[in-house]
Image 1 (cartoon, rainbow over the protein chains, first blue to last red):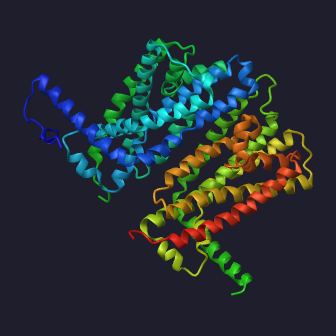
Image 2: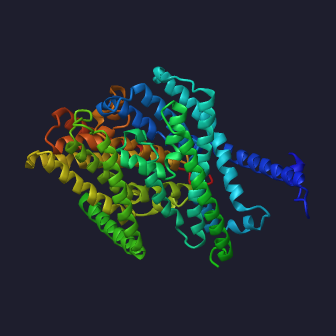
Image 3: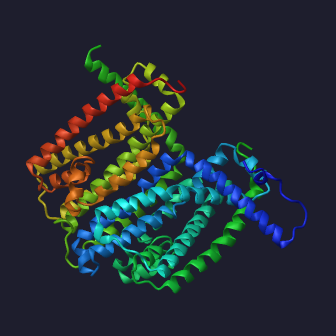
Length: 281
Length: 268
């Protein structure tokens, strides 16, 4: 084991450089430890990955539905869109409210709160580590999909691929921050996770998981694009699969929502921690 | 002991179980509001998604909009049934295996499969069941099918067969926790695959249609009952549904017996 990972925090004022170095060291240690933890649960993570089949079911429906052909979208385009949506979904899934609620109810939160590191980074690292664990499973499933639907095979242009990766990762943070805002309600209620459904329902119907938003009536589509949900699925999937998209407007929406959600989360976190009295207290 | 009195004793116990679970859940009346709101939003979203397939006079796998509503209604009904009985009880079964609490269940003077399958009742799936039923009625009336007594009776029978198959799928999966302790994630996979039942099975490509009528019998959960209600079902599919329901009960029973023979309690 690398002893340096566990060196105590340097005290006192730091120069900008050493502060950055220590932040990087902490990030690395967090990620490595969480990744080791997630690898222990790889069988469960495989099952979670499999439970995200909804986009593939929707592909099989849309590729043979007359309504799809009438809208001028070919089965091949559907295959690429929904496969991209499936992959994006795998790397934007968020479960912070469930992890936090369990830690809170079981009393594990108190020791974690004593650490000189804001709690959110621990959960964020867990999510990123879980994504790394998913990666080989998702690659295998993509390969299987291409074997079953060979006409769907495509290689996105490097620029589009890069933009799609960026959009998907920003989509993950957007999803994380939205759910984290609900998570903070755990400081006030024992069952905050029940409210997560009210995030999941609009996500399901507005993100583009069930149909590309281009098939929605114009008014619904325009409304959906104002919400943060298409940024978590439709935008990256469309970028990766080569569909038409106004990338600039899409990234502007993400920036706008991040600008709302980051201060909101900070406010909720500060108010919540001040209220925290440990379970049963 | 004679069978009739055994059944009566079991029925009396279950009635007590359910009334006590209801009394406990009534502590959380605010939940009802949340559940009704969530159910209405989900149903509106599902109807909207379904409507996308019926653009300019199009059909979905040979089904009209109104007939497809019956399928969605039965799916909603079964979903409500899952949250009322299957999820709370069979989730509990997995926990009992993990904690070793199953030992105490096996000692009770009651059939263990019955106890594990019917011990609690969560009323929060009821709004979904009611809405599902309403959707079935609306779809049937609007599709212009004459509600004949035979069609309604076969329809009801096929819904019961579908519920039986659904129960067996869940029970078999939960029972395998005796071998693989951490199985609860597998039920998420089952749930996500069963979502295919929102749409008539004929809307899927041929290869998937075969899968949905054999390995994962989604077809017999929603499509066949809907066909029966609309008076469209073939004798063959009705018979297949009933046989499958019978087999699934026998199979789940046999698997449970086998599982108990392999049960060595927690930590041993």
